Image (cartoon, rainbow, N blue to C red):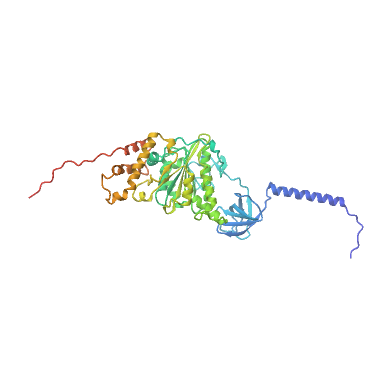
Length: 475
C-alpha cells in the first residue's frame, strides 16, 4: 500500500481545465452541427444492398442529398438519399455499382440540387447529369438553375391564346396547338411516335427545342439524332439522353434536367418546344425507386408517389410571366395499346389535350397515324378563328361517320341511297384521308394546312364515264 501524500489538490487548475475542455467540446459540436469545418465530416457505413437499394447507417442526410461510397477498386460511387427508416438511410446509386463491399464507407457530399446551364447547350447532347455525350468537348456554363424547378403562381401565367405552327398538316388543321400548351402523344410501340416527334422538331416555329429521350434504347438515341432530328434540327436543339441502361434515378434526373433547361430559355423570353419521350418511362423509373424502398403499390403496380410526381413535372411547362413559353409534347407509351393504362389515364387528366396514334392506321400505311376521333386539343377553340373551328368540326363529323360504318361498307352490306349523310361520307372519305397523310420530310405550314382543310371539304367531282361505242362483233 502506498502512503497518502500531503500534496494539496489544486482545485482551481482542475476547474480551469474542465472549463477549457467543455469549451473545446462545445466548439467541436457546433462545427459538426453546422458542418462548416473543411475536411471534418461524419461518415457512415454501408450495411445492406438489395437490388439497386443501398442501406447506410452512422450519419444523417436530408432527402435528395448526395453521398459518396468507397469501393474495392478505389473509385467512389455516387448515390442519392431517397428515403429513411429510423436510423437507416436508403440510397439509390446514380451509376454502376460494381466494386461495392460490406461496411463500405459512406460520406455525404455537398449538393445544392442545381444544374449548370447556358446558351452553349444548343447543338449538344448530354446525359441526365449534364455531362456531354457527343464527344465535342466540355460545355462552358454561365448560370445555374434548380433541378426541381420553382413553381409559378397560376395567376401569373399568361393564358394560351396564340396558335403554334408545328408543320404537321393534320395537327395544324384539326388539333391546333397553342403556345404554352401541354400535349400528350399516346401510342403503342412501333406506331410512329418517334417519327412524328422528329417532324415536329424540324418544322415547329420555336426559338429553342429541348428533347428529352428518357428510357429509350441506346440505338434509338443515335438514330433519332442522326436520322430523324438531323443537323438542321440539332443546331437549335438540346438533347438530354438517359437511355434504358441508366439507373432509374438518372432517368428521373434526365426528365427534370430537360425541363430545367427549357425553363432557363423560357425565362429569357424565348419560345421553347419541349419534346419528352417518354413520360411513361419517367413514371416507371419512379415506380422502380418507390417499390425498392418499400412503398406499397396502388394501381397496377404503380405506387401513389408516381401519380404525385407526374403533375409536378408537367406543371413546370407552359407560359411564363415575361412572354416566354414552353410548349410541351409528352409521349405516353400505351402498353398493348391500352388507353386505360394508369399512366395514360393520369396523363390525360393533367395535360391540355392528347394526340392518339392508331395501330390500325399505321398498318394500313397511313402516316402519321393520327386517330382523329380519339384525339383532342382542349385549347383549340381559344386560339383559332370560328370559321376554322367550324371546318374542323365538320371534317371530324364526316370522318367519324365513315369510320363508324366502315365494316358495313367494306362487306357490301350498305346500299347507296339508304342514308344521305353516309353517302356523303363515302364520297368524301378518300380526300379526307389524303388530307391527314404527310411525308416525314415535307413540312406543311399553318396557311397551307388551312387551305388543304377547306379543299378537303369541297364536294367531290363526279367522275363520268366517256361515251364509247361497243366493240364490233367480228363474224
